[in-house]
Image: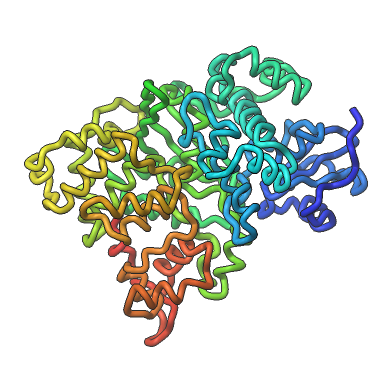
Length: 515
C-alpha cells in the first residue's frame, strides 16, 4: 500500500512531532500520527520506538488517518484516546461541522437506525449537500467515513477488552449485521475481528459477571474533586463511594433504553492517574449497550475536555482550578429531577429528598456491590405519582408540579436531556415548565446537556464568588470566559475566599449548590 507523506493542513507538524517525542498526554486525542513505514497510526502517548520525522503524517482525527489508509496501532489503541473538543468560537461553518460530529458521537441522540448524513443535516437545519461540504472541509472525510471510524474503533475496544460474542460486538457498535461488520473490519484494518481478539488481551479487564474497559483522558485531572462532588450528592441505593485497595471508586446503578428494550445494571469506576485512565467495570446485563454506557460515563466524568484550551481562557482568573472538570450525569432525566429537588435547599437536604424518592418509586435491582439495590425512578413512575405520595416524602407542592410536568415531557418524547439535544430549544422548553427558572435550566444544561457555556447567573454562591450582587453583574463579568463559562462556575465554587472587595471567590463549601 502506498501512503502519501504530506500532513493535512491545520496542524503544526513540528509541534506534533515534539509532543509525540515527549509522549505528552495533554495532546492525547488532539492529533494522531500515521507512520508511512509501518502503515499504522498512533496516539501521541504511544510508547513504541519513535519513528523518523520524515515518516510521520499528522491527522486531527482518527477518521482522517483511516481514510488515508493507516491502521490503528494495537499497542496504544487509538480507541482509548479522549475525543476531540466539540466546541469552538470560530466561524459558523466550523461550528456547524463540530456540531454534526458531536451528534455522530452521541449514541443517545439516535434510535436503532443510527445517524445518517441526511438526518443530521435535518437536525441542524441545513441541506445534506451543504453538511457534507463543510464536514469534509473541516475533517477531511465525509460524515459517513467519520461514523464508520467511530463504529470500528468502538468495536475494536470491545474485541480487545471483553469476551462479548462477535454478534453482540457488531450490534453494540452500530452495525446492522455481523456480515457488514466483518466486511468493514477487514476492509479498513486488513484483519479479521477474531484474529484481533486472539492476538490481543481479551478478558484482561473481565471479571465474573462483568466486563471491564479503560477510558482515556487528558491531564491535568482533579479526580479527588470529581469524586468528592459525587460523594456529597450520592443517593442511597443508587450510588456508593468506597475504596478498593486504598483507591477511591464510584459505583452506581443505571438503566439504558434502546428502542423497546430496557437494560438495567450497575457500573463501577476508579481512576488510574499514572496512566491517565479510568477503569470502568460494567455488569453483564449492560454489556449489550456498552458503547452507550461508555459514552455516558465519559460525559459524567467530563473525560473529553481539552484542559489546555480551557485553562488558556480561565487560568488568569482561576489559577487554582486547572484540574477541575464539570461533573455530568449518566441519566439526564435523573439529573433534572435532582436539580428541581435541590432548588433553594442545601446539598444534604436535597440528598435526603432524592433518597426518599428512590426508595418510594425506584425499582429494586440485585447487584454485587454493597449498598446498590435501586434504580432511579423512571419518567413513567414519577408522572404517575400522586401529590399525596410526593408530599409524604417532604416535597412541597411547587416542586411536585415541576417534577410531574418534567416527567410527562420526557415520557412523551417532547424533551430530550442528553448531550445531543438542541441546547437553546431545550433551555426554552425547560423554562416553560412550572417551577423551573433560569437557574435550574442552566444547571441542567451544564451537567446533562454538556453545554460548556452554561452560566446560572442567578446563583447566590456564584455571585459571592465573583464579588458581585446581581445576576446581571455576574453575566457581564463572565463574558471573557466564553465559551467555557461552565468551567468558570466550577472554579468559582471551588475558589478560596478572597479579601474583602475582591472579584474572585467562592463560598467555603458547595452547600448552596444542591443539585
